[in-house]
Length: 263
Image (cartoon, rainbow, N blue to C red):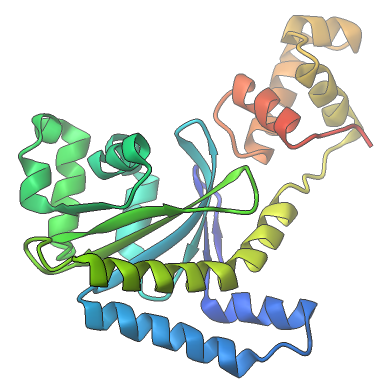
């Protein structure tokens, strides 16, 4: 597993990582049976006509992704990295359709290129990146996650030029395989997410964060702590980096959502 320190944080993991964690918490687990299930899922998706599957558990603030736990198997790592690092998800018409309906969304490039916003620079970048990776059509869906602060999204792509082949039988197979994969990956992801919340702070940084969560301004914090505004501003910027957020408001929101308390 590797973690990219840029925003958003991208955490790659393998099915082997997830299964090793399952064995760690339950030494009596039937690991070969789970490995066989995952092989069957991969084969089922390939036989259905899909060439890639991107499985991601996303920690978000609104529509901004803070951290993405991304499975290596069946995915295209170069596409996924570009998609997240260039924030192509922010203008992805497929995701907009998914948010609106809450139902699995089928798509193909000709359909996306015919949309009114296809000429926007970032949408155009997304479409050209999809085409460059031979991702001509596919299916995107969301799955339930045990943690309220995580969203699980699956994106399957194909080299096929249309979606007429994605019928009820194919959709049923995709859902069954996706739920199996998610069930086996989720305990590992939950553990990683929990560990990511452990942030080590100096006493002074913790004092600043405690006051910030309570709604104090930088000026008020400086006065309360008998410190300079410059020093407090420096601490806030350091805290933003430690919590992997972009601004002061996100820092206060995330720390409050995590239930952060001064130890």
